[in-house]
Length: 355
Image (cartoon, rainbow, N blue to C red):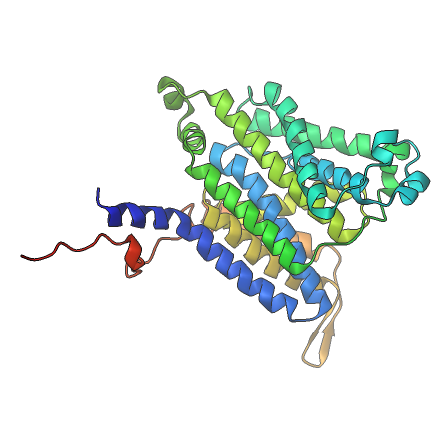
């Protein structure tokens, strides 16, 4: 195989991620130069993108939906909160924290990474029994974990703040560092699906029996994907905590679970391009429905708001996609490399000299 052909195949593999990053960068630039409300919407979208990438790493490659993915987000958010809230504030609102955690204090970047690592460690323990299940059984088992985590967080008043949640987390997330973390999440998702482990996991998604017959360890591949997806989701949770400053256990429950799943399904759960497209499309639709839900002017007339319109609208969109385009907006395919795109001179095979 020629050097040019190999280089083009590599460029074709990374092109969807590069195109997605370019689109997200343009949206971030547009949002950061607008109003404060628009800037907050863009930051929320970027955090949602990190969460969708976390879900995509496991569900998109294994074909198993993790309905309890936001349990890792909650763990990442609380871990980052414990490590960044000032010590004097922790002594007042969280008297039950262990002494070592009460006095622990790290920077925002370290807190994000630690939040992801704690979520991954929790997932590594869960993966031992859960990944022995398949299909709807595995999905329901992860949902049971989400319920259990929510109940524990809501009833541990001295440690987690209970239903009152945490507050006082320093706000350190801006549109551009949220973009940087979103880029890291996309890079992790792309790198994983291109690795031998990622390819083998995708093989189990297509035909588990055939994959086992070829000697693929289904349990191992699923566990690796599950832990990596938990790390990325935990990072998203830590970013959520550092952006909102205050949150309760219900922030990581059913409403956001439905939104993240809808973003992945609408875009196309089998492709990185689809995952990013779903976030962009549903963020725009969700924001439009939210404004209509609060009441909107149509010319000289004012249409009164209707509570719940956003959730109903998103549900109808998801239902329409499942009925008429079950593989999502992208059809489960990646964005193709344009045929006319030329490679840089250093990557092209030098032409043979004529005698």
